[in-house]
Amino acid sequence: MQVTRRSLLLAAVAAGVPACTSSGVVAPAELVLATGPDGAVFREIGGALALALADQLPDTRVVARHTAASVENVRLLSEGWVHLGLSSLDPLFEALLSADDPAGISAVGRLYDSFLQVVVPADAPVRRIADLAGRRVSFGPVESGTEFTATRLLGLLGVGVDARRMAHAEAARQLAAGSIDALVALTGIPTPAITGLLGSLPIRLVDLPDEAVRLAEAYPGPYAPATIPATTYGALGPCRTFAVPNLLLARSALDASVVEVVTRTVFTESARIVAGHPEASRINVRTGIATGQVPLHRGAERWFRSVKR
Image 1 (cartoon, helix red, strand yellow):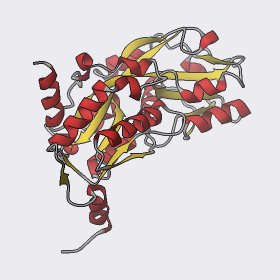
Image 2 (cartoon, helix red, strand yellow):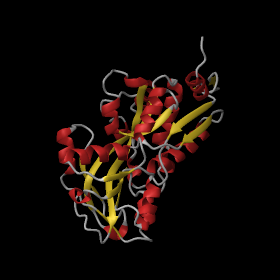
Image 3 (cartoon, helix red, strand yellow):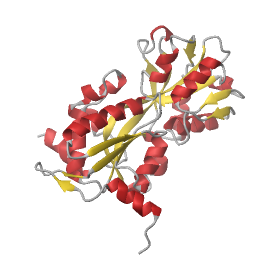
Image 4 (cartoon, helix red, strand yellow):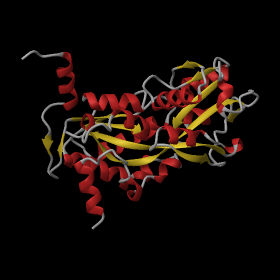
């Protein structure tokens, strides 16, 4: 049999023969969690979750892999490069919902919502999405959920921009330097990259009162009108926009005993995992099973059933 680079890397992800611990958990030697880019909540939440899982799986090396976020994470999962990954729901509708077990991926649970945020300098003439036409706009990294949703939204509205691809932290630096005209971020709130701008550049959030309706009509399922609360960014005040649910995903082939531990950790140690992120504090068992058309992993199902007894 020919040994390919892909087969070798898949073996590396599996990290050898899984070991059965004294608690009956069949855990791999290494467990890889795909997170997100610099300046995004996915990276911070994913890193905190990895630390919590390391405590629960002491014989396993838990790795938080930095990525572009949703679209890349779904690809890495479907190709078998990682065991777990975070993703907003809208790319999943495109990539995963054509089969009963699409691409071998299942849901651990629903976590919290991401909000689309369009940030411009306070004195910019941009008051609505149409005003971005022809301007330099960060769409987030290549293969990010931000890139996916921003491309979809502006395409739907027929607004052409000079799209730039970069992490949110880099986009914030370029916005402050005047190298770009707007920063688009689909992520949890408060977003670290945006919070970091508050002390260095007067900024404003662009109000998006109608975009959720337009998206929901064109792409039913993942989009809902939402308001960024006035308390999120201090003096910026509230902002109308739309929200997209975020899921924690797992390879369907990952042993159910491991996913049961992952699910328990997410929903019983959420205060530790989401420290400093008010929106992510909405992680709870009641909404955790609301993963839409993405099926729950059998290990997650087992844990959710156990807490309902």
